[in-house]
Image (tube, rainbow, N blue to C red; front, side):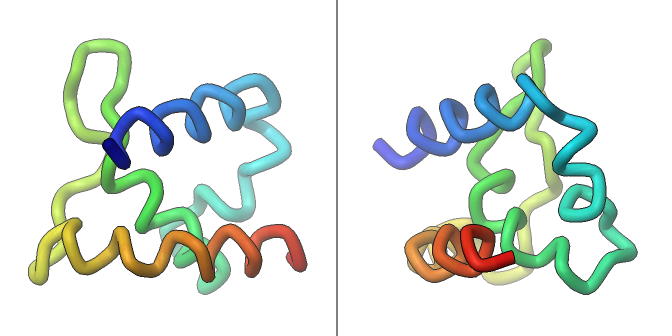
Length: 74
């Protein structure tokens, strides 16, 4: 059930993708908040946006409420 929410979040991001540039930059330390969300997203061809973490996305989903608040404050 989490995948559709994350995919919707990503769809909203794509409306102003340039505004998310700093948080999408993997070299940026602030990129971390997007990772738990983008791990559950696929591109237009159905491929995952990010490679799975070592511990798997099931661990990352628990971080989503915290990262949404962190992004709001950012």
